[in-house]
Image 1 (tube, rainbow, N blue to C red):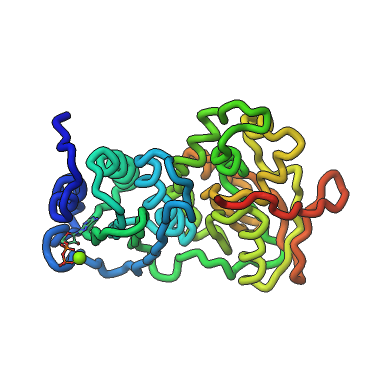
Image 2: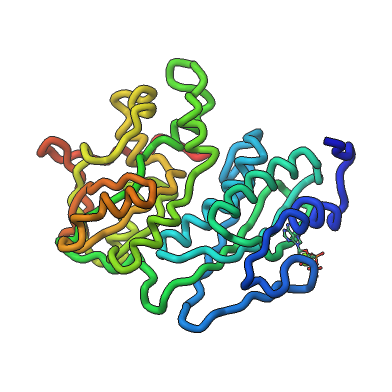
Length: 321
Ligand code: ADP
Ligand code: MG
């Protein structure tokens, strides 16, 4: 493809890989290339902003494909916006690299822009610096005033729901499966290319009483909803959705993967009883399955049970890199 061999300087990186590939929306007045970006804020909306940084060796292991890093840098932020019920609009990217390797940059930009375009999010600026490999993305989105979904609105009697399946990403980041074979592509991709639940999050704005995206593990993240809301929860461990590939890989330990593994980027949310009936239909319109895994209760305890017996959450035996 006529790629130059040597490392590139900063303006070349910006213009070739980012400015040159950005697709703007009509609400972007000034994009990449000036001292700052200008975007049009419309009356009747509130802005929602999230920032997350990912660094090699801390948030992802060395050696994963550059496209996965570009995807993930944006995906974790879109997932945060989804968890607020917001529609993503614009993003900025602060990229830190030890060397500007054209092949790596091409892969990174491919992963980043494929996801940005899928959700109509415009890259409007950023910074490019020399340092350890990592990327910090800020995403801005919008909600109708008062419709953002916080972690703090769960009340006793509300159902606890989740999107998708859990534990896949943990299995997908293993160097190999417990039998010593390569981990299957489905699980590997669940780790490398997590899909932020943008449509589902947006459609829950007038429905969910509390919501977050699960990045650190289903159990731990659920306790963040209960703590913020001042409630407890009673959860059915056997209802936690598991993929057939995870069951095949982890067997008896699949549930342990699901409850304690991180990097799922699924949504966990609570819904008042009267509003649960058509949730599966709503979710299937968004292309994602949803499952009810329990009920919010009074108190502060988060209890798991299985077949009528208390199910102690296993201590997380998995270290993130
Ligand atoms: P300044 O010194 O004024 O910050 P820079 O040379 O850092 O200018 O950036 C020039 C332009 O390129 C700015 O519009 C900035 O937002 C944009 N930019 C720099 N790095 C990136 C990047 N990694 N992705 C997108 N835009 C970037
Ligand atoms: Mg700069």
